Image 1 (cartoon, rainbow, N blue to C red):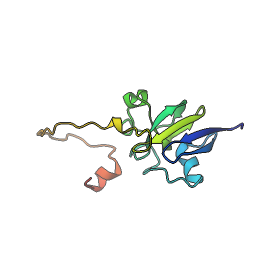
Image 2 (image 1 turned 180 degrees about the vertical axis):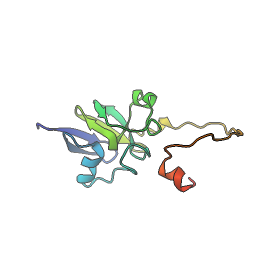
Image 3 (image 1 turned 120 degrees about the vertical axis):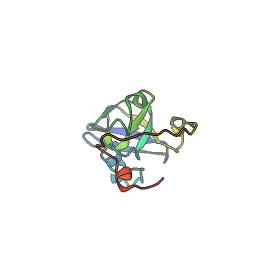
Image 4 (image 1 turned 45 degrees about the horizontal axis):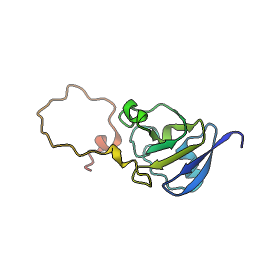
Length: 130
């Protein structure tokens, strides 16, 4: 079909059509799929997903949500991704998981001082605890 790409969402075992100029997230939500998301602007990383196959274009987003290194490892943001080709995707914790992005780190306590503060995520701004 011209003007759209087919995206296989392994987490829900379903394929959807994503019209040109629409993000993966918007198309999924339009088609009744409860795709994980938060801010919808590439800042919170709630829609971080694993690109299993295909190519995407990234819209503007913060490197906190997905770094260049994570992109090379196949991570995308559903809210800031336009499919360039047909895709196979899974969101984190889904089938084919993407959970290998999480690692266990040894706890380290450091004394520090903040000299300036800009561009906090909504969670940090509200002081919410995980």
